[in-house]
Length: 631
Image 1: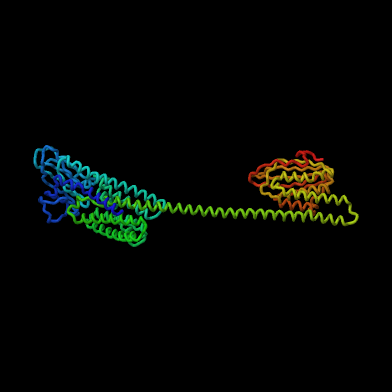
Image 2: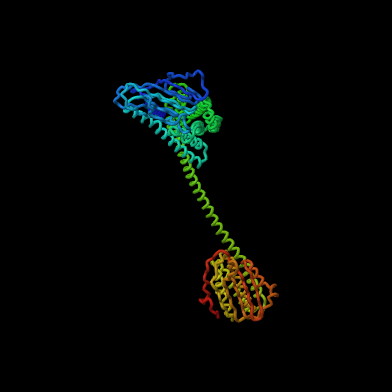
């Protein structure tokens, strides 16, 4: 891995400096006569007359915080005047004029440079006019502003066939390469910020902002007419560069688990104050501020490299090792560029290594992020699988608990049913049997009376058994069961029963207990009718009554033509009291009206508010139709 990255870096360096080797086959102009015109205070020792200078000429290094113009003059020998000649200038700016033999050949921008004129990063190619002269006099006039990176690189002279490929190669690496770097950094930064928006993990924020800022500063080389006026077109790329480096250093520390150290917080401060420093360095301008700031950033970067490499050496995690190699290479490239820019006379024409080394560094960091995301996704998948297995176990346990609960409910229901039967048998049938026993033991007891009470006991027993056969909530079936059991007794007593039961809803909240309560209430009512009313006709009606606000109720009314009784005095009686108690247990009301020749008992049962299925009334006993007369 390390060998491959070193090889790639070497190839980039050779490509970036390739025009210099090609230039040796043609004429490379590295010395010229310079005439200066300075605007503003300058050193008195500066000779105003033309003097020889070595190219490249970096305006900011040579003149400092001063604006002005520099006219460079030199001769270009022509070996064959019949062959078209040309000039190739790798770097020139900010504005310029090119004169050949005293005639203007090309011009860019204004003098002094306008706020949008900035050709200092774009290679230039000039085809010379045809001439038979053996020597051509060339003058290049450059207008530069302080801190705007103006100046002139060595000039390459030769035939068009020789220089055109060199120019296209330089244009490719300077412009197309810069465009590629800006796009790669922008895409990687945007993707990282999207990940940060989803996960809110700070290292993705550092990397995303760092790549976007690097994309902004790289984009400067793509413009000759700047999108922002000077000095802001100088402040924005410089601030982006000064913020990108500490942000990506902090990202590297976060990857290796050192994101909360003092060095990481210091790098965060550097990124925060980068716009202020860039503004002061460009607008004032303070030319000493940029070297001092770069030295500070470089020192913090070295501290980051030490931490990252130390972790990478001790760690078995592949991302840490890849990150360690990447940061070492990019810091070495930055150190080389910084040294060359500060010390080399050829600094203005040198292609920075870090511009190309950064591509490998960005891709390495993107790979680290992708690897982290892949591991996170795999960890989430494993957690999901573990949760699914745990949920399956929990579901199995819950199903077992529910099964036990259902068995327990069944057992409790059976126990409650036994208790209900026991209570009903004890309170009802048991009491009747005890009374019959006492009656049979008394001398002179009529057998008809004993038989009548025995029949009541048998009917009550049958109704108790009927309530156990699942007619919960079906009021019509409960009424039909009562009719079936008590019909023969009414016939034997000479009472004609008219039955009028309509379509009734199901009482969903009822159980066998409520059905039995209804049957016992009616048993009590019919028993009193047979024993005391001396009636010849009786009727039972049951219908659904619609009330206000969608309230519904079932009204069950039993009436006869017997002798009647005093309803007020009867309140102390046990029969009516039992019927009222059972009506309350059913959640309803029980009303009694009686006079000679007409007695009416009304049971009012509210129906639950939820819509219920409506059941047809059960077929009456003994095969009789619902509205037939029982005789």
